[in-house]
Image (cartoon, rainbow, N blue to C red; front, side, top):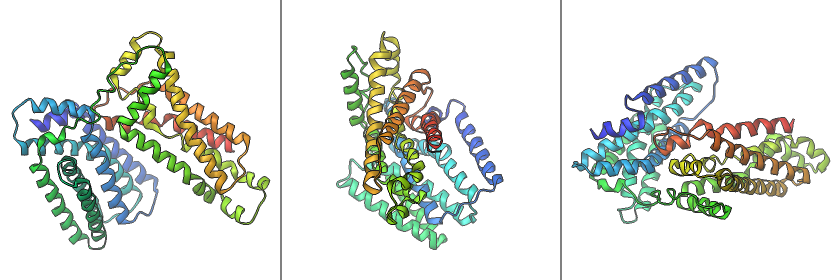
Length: 400
């Protein structure tokens, strides 16, 4: 019963989303297979990619705000600890494997030729990641030096993946044993550890009152500091902006030109790739759905009068500030490595930041994301990538 309650919540009453996901990934697999695309992927990279991706999605599913409310309903009924733990993690694990990991594996399997042992190894890695993440989630707070112990455990799993690459049969046996250990640890855990009060959504349920943009900006800043994943993603994008010029410079041959002391006028002939960086560093998609992720706030904003200017103008300004910060870091890094940053490049960067902020704000007003089951659905929704995709096409046009 607990499994069905959780599974029907994430898949729908008749498991329609599970059937849809399997059909979509099958079409993707055969489409890529028929297209004849071939990419060489090392077996260890496949195992590592599968494990890390599955663990990340599973952690997001376990920490979902909507799932915390569902857990409160489960706790109101009499339950057996082991049954609840096994059923709850199994349901969310099935959701992770069927809707997310299966897509990654279908793409990887379609573009490369794999043996049966490697396919089995990737499946074992995904299942192992589900149960490891479930046990790490419930034990990380209760164990003494929990994060340190879990980090050491993850390091041991990296060794197992190496063994799986060189000795598939022995590595598979070790992965099964490790997944079994994670399963037993999950069963022994306190069921109430699945419910955590940090970031419980109290902040997000406060409606935006008044017409002062300072209140909205304060709300957005407090929301990002309370929900660390948004802040962490922003910092990651700033890090990408720091190293992106080096990568684009190697692609465009600018590194060789600088080493040969070409003048700036000649080097600008190769800077058609620079606008692509403007589009890439604006792909901070989580902050572009801050209204969709809080249906109560969206209802309040649409119900109260004058919210187009009271909320969306400061929200658009906030997105522009975030985008422009990333653009500034990108320009400074480009100047440091290659030089030749001119005024029109700064103006182009500001235009990309403004277009990205305006497009994301308009989508949140006219096409908000609704009907999602848990936050993981929201964070992986295709609508998030409409504006970055348009900006990337625009960057190619501008560079040409």
